[in-house]
Amino acid sequence: MKVAVIGASGRGGSRIVDELAQRGHQVTAIARNPEKIKAQANVTAVKGDLFDAGFHGLLSGHDAVVSAVHFSASDPRKLIEAVRASGAKRYFVMGGAGSLEVAPGVRLIDTPTFPAMYKDEAAKGADFLDMLRKESDLDWTFLSPAAMIDFGARTGKFRLGKDQLLVDEHGKSTISFEDYAVAVVDELERPQHSRQRFSVAY
Image 1: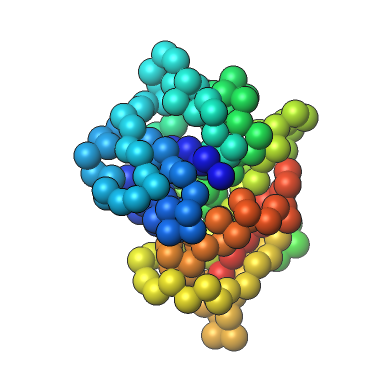
Image 2: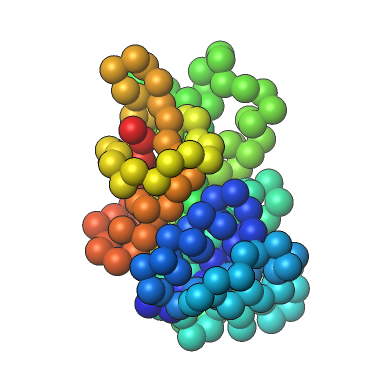
């Protein structure tokens, strides 16, 4: 596939670029500072900013678009409009865990122990998901990670869920960026969650 990754120099975006490239897909890695993108086969680094006129042109000609940008530093409406204008068939969003349920009707973001420093970002991610769910003509997928995501090993072994927070037998909810990226590319290659949110954790 030809895949455009927005936010390609970030923690999640860079690992998604790596996973796509290692599987032989052609990647357009878009970032405000493309010099931060690692040089490797199958990857073309491109300078781009969502708020620039004509941004959608960078997405044209791709089979799928992945956005791995901070919700608080972007505009979901502009992202959706850019993907639609580009003609790309699929839109994949690197989501957050805050909107996952920890009990019926209770989201992680609403629990008293949710860190205040992440609340704004998590709330904007939840709003983005709500916006996507109202889209009638966009083939989107939103992948929420575990509550804790950080750099780690690429094991290829994890569990997939839906709208509930996944925890292990010790009550921990974790995933590495590397395995998150595996789940992203698995879904792009073999779509199972069209117009849905799903989740991933160990």
